[in-house]
View: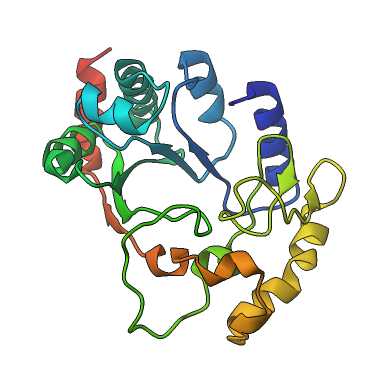
Length: 236
């Protein structure tokens, strides 16, 4: 759940302590005009909105309790406001390849690029081996997981899991409301080192069935900014 006041506080803190890359991932359901305007003033680097379908039927199949038209309206407003500014965060819409949504990708891509969004296409995650992605890795040499060695994740309540595959925070390193981000990052150091040194036998058991190290790469398509600004002007 997006909690605006706490979120803004966390972003302000990150900027004050000198973080150079502040990124927000959201499903866009609560990204109304008031919140969107405030987020554009926080110094965010990127806002990523997960939208895995173009039609209502497809979107709402994969985004449980989501409202396709509401999310589209929220993000379109955010893009119009961003286009009227000389600087601000990159707005990225993310399309995760599922079993039957690929047929909508071309229309999805054209819609969002035309409004000034970056379009990100990536394969689905297993979320730490909890779901079968049908990705065959039998003949591939394992590499250090990009999710584990480059990122530190945080739940809405401040808990910091070992990695995004720990969806329930079962191996949480601590809580950002109680510990500094630098201390939490250091606490995860041995875990990252095991990956970097390819000591995969020392990783938690959840890593044995996880294929998410295979899905770190993605395709990113960036828009024509001049066209996006022109569209924003027409919508005043």
